[in-house]
Length: 388
Image (cartoon, rainbow, N blue to C red; front, side, top):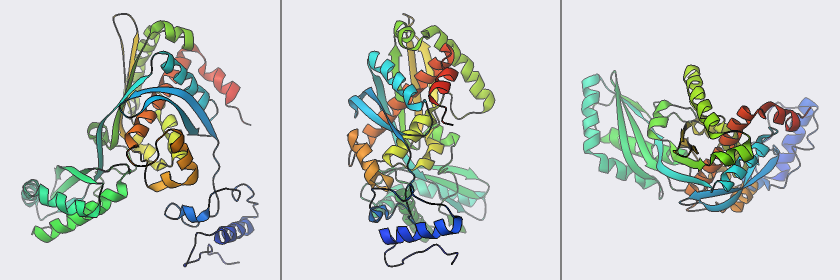
């Protein structure tokens, strides 16, 4: 048997080719593929999302809600699909959703929007690189015009500049409509860079990404300046309601938050909260987001306070939530169903989805923090999370 994975250069997205690849790897490994090969997805619908298609990874989905969201785009109660294999996760988020609903709902705001590509231009020396930076500022409008020739939805916002040695790093910032936009801004920036190269003398060379866009990697730059959507979820919860639903108090949660801030600092964490990655990952898988973006999207800044009545104010800022309601995996059949059940499929819905995810993260944060203080954390995992 050949070691080469079967392919059909004329049409590789057919059930025939998927079956041939299953037979190939089953023969190579003596592994039956009864579950991988059992699906309702039409292989042709996966073109552009996967190569060498041979089946599906079936991840259990749980339903969380109703989640009450007081957003500018998401308003009302939502049931949120969460794809995960971690026991207790959906139950914990569901408990948080109950608390938030009884407290009047989560206020969620999308306060910034930017997607980047960050080329680096290299010169003979630092002075030439500095002069180039001035030229970039003077010719911003022409550069923006060139970039926008490649897209109808991507819009150039600004160009940040960073100098080091004889290099000039340019961080091109765009808004990208309902798409996540990494490929969109890559193409737009390439066209802009080629125009820059043709119109500015003295450039020794350039690289389309000098790594300051930090694609699929967290960075403090993104925490400060945003990548994707910057989402802030906040709520004030009466202390009595916390005691009734969660078995803890506002004062206890507030004091624990102060302790956790120190722990996060000592650990060098990108997140001062409990586990935003859990809710983000589960909703990303369900709705067809690029799951690797969790590396950036899971960064979070949690802030808490007590008001003059002793009630608990809690907010979570997600500075790099990279989501889409159009393009990529959002068009796959299962993921389309999940988006539609939240009213988030198609054009004009990306901020709505971002707000729902922000509220979802809040539900998980308050539930886990409360469980740790109330002593429910270990017992709940013993009860619900032991699949042996």
